[in-house]
Amino acid sequence: MNAIRTIPAASGRSLPRNTAWAVAGNMYFAGGRFLIFVLLWKFLPSEQVGQAILALAIVTPLSFLFNMGLRLVLVTDTTNRFQAGCCLTARVFSNLILALVLAALCGVQYGLWSIEKMAILLLAGAVRAVESWADIYLAVLQKHERMKNVSISQILKVSLVLICAAVFAPLTQKAIWILAGWALAVLIVSMVYDRPRAAQCESIALRWNQQCCIQLIHLGLPLGIFITITSFNERVCLYFIDHHFGDQFVAYFSTFLAFIAGLGAVQNGVNQALLPRLSHYYQRNRKQFVTLLGQVLLPSWAVMGCFLFVVWWQGELILHLVAKPEYARYADIFVVVAGGGCLLLTSMILGDAIIACRRFQSRMVIVSLGLTANVLICWGTLAEYGMPAAAWAMVFSSALTCVTGGAILWYALGKKGS
Image 1 (cartoon, rainbow, N blue to C red):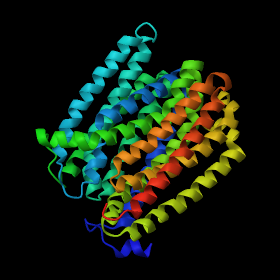
Image 2 (image 1 turned 180 degrees about the vertical axis):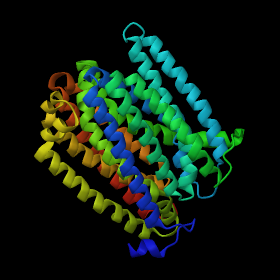
Image 3 (image 1 turned 30 degrees about the horizontal axis):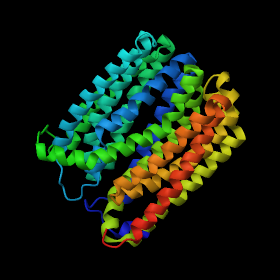
Image 4 (image 1 turned 135 degrees about the vertical axis):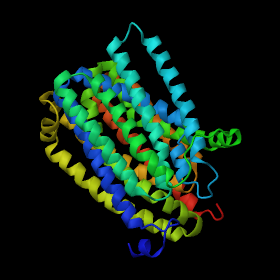
């Protein structure tokens, strides 16, 4: 850690302090988000939970595609080529496209889905739309290494959503009210807290600049595609499970994935706090790049190992505590998913390190391989072997992305003048 403290950040802010804020904020965010789903598992029928999870699984990759990874473009923009106002304008258009696509999907599914299920899908789209707008404000704060403000924003948002879920889940037993409260909570915090703090760093007024937008699309679209593929890879098993077994089994499998998502949120907080510094080191001091990357990997592996052991030891008890007894029948699958999750978190670290090297297209190749493996395994085995096949597909897909990601990162660090 001495090496980290002795090299100042471009902003002059303390890296350990920023990392501490990022970890604390993401731990609170992950814990609060997990409690939200605990309330869903405890109070909502499993079919309702499955519909909400499936809606988010459909909407999230689409929103990532249309949003084009602009947050990462802004955060790694060390030469200030792009203005936040242009990114905000791009988000206005991307959210309009998302709304049209979801409306078209509801039209296609009319008669096959209930009105309530379509409403859940549209509300999930509203959640992602307001989150994508707030994402630009957080990108500005992250770029200027103001992770304290980013963390406070996360804490405020998840607290409001948790209160909403605690009120509406037992009273209504309907996912639609929780999603509506979710969207409203994010909108309030982004306007009242995120926007004023981001405006202290740089101008965030909506701006139309055709040349800037073309450059954003050129740089951000490949990034958005690979983030979309990553998102599909994490959720593709849910599409197959819903097709073969229905919404109820989507709810069961989502319980296992929620634990992985919680760990992933914490890990993402660490990665995002270090991303500007890794980008700086890659350009100027690759020895420090490797040192910092190692300081992220080693403690992460220790946490992953402890998590896997606890799930193997008391997985059934954990599922009894956080959900209804019917969920605990699948504790053996939980162990396999936990193993795949450990590999997935390692691939997240390596993937963000590759982003710091600005090798966006290489990163897209990695996640494409992982998605292809996941789809092929689910397609060929899920109907016959059920949910265990989806768990093992996650293991093999994550292992493949770890190996290929490590190889590409090794090449990027060894190549001079890149």
